[in-house]
Image 1: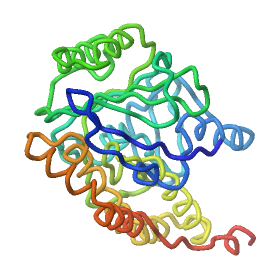
Image 2: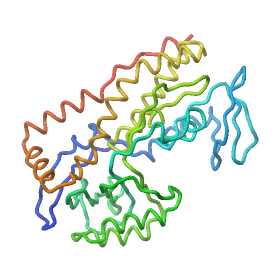
Image 3: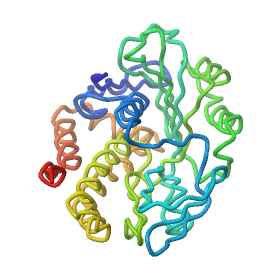
Length: 327
């Protein structure tokens, strides 16, 4: 289901509207929720691809003919190529390229989102309390008007926590927003019962080369910037180009990997810039920073200029691989 991107309204502690950003500022002309996109891709590929759930890779060993892969639960297997499309905290990148701290840089903010009932009766769009270094917002679910999504963001040095411990993550969020008013206490109460939670730092991944031997990276694993709406889209574009280049190179992975990176690195790095600016834009750290952002963005000329710059950064001319696939 394609949906129009939501507008965003920022409120001050007194409930007064500070800034309203139109729908086109939040993303492209439409949005496809990640869960729906995942279901769509799975449905159209399940007949030709093998999916293994509930397992993870523990070791990679390149052989003369492929890559031998060890799994936490399943038996070892050998594959022609391994493509790491497993996000900012990529396990494939860690095993094939080196530890995460070599490639991932914390950008000073954390973000969280979870689902809850639409108790405010919100229309499509989101509204949130904005104070220096923090944003607490909630928006209606376009697919189900009885549901809503909370989005919290806060400035912080890099934190030490277990990424698999949801209770610990919920406590970090509660402690960071416990002193705020508006609807924040009620939103935090909904967090207590939320069965699912996304919580992560806003960070950037930079890998000098996106491939090594028979292993390649795409999406956030190669050139990621948490949040900003670009990670999933960049990964889909990268998957299309990588598959097309492998077909065009008739399986010569070295040639295909080189062409793939040459075509997409500039585009991906342009998309990264949105992630770099997300935290400081949504939650400037100072009162002065908030005032300056609001004053500038309330000017239509400035807003239009930023929208135009965003379109230029996030556009890429893609090759037509149909002839290669038809042979």
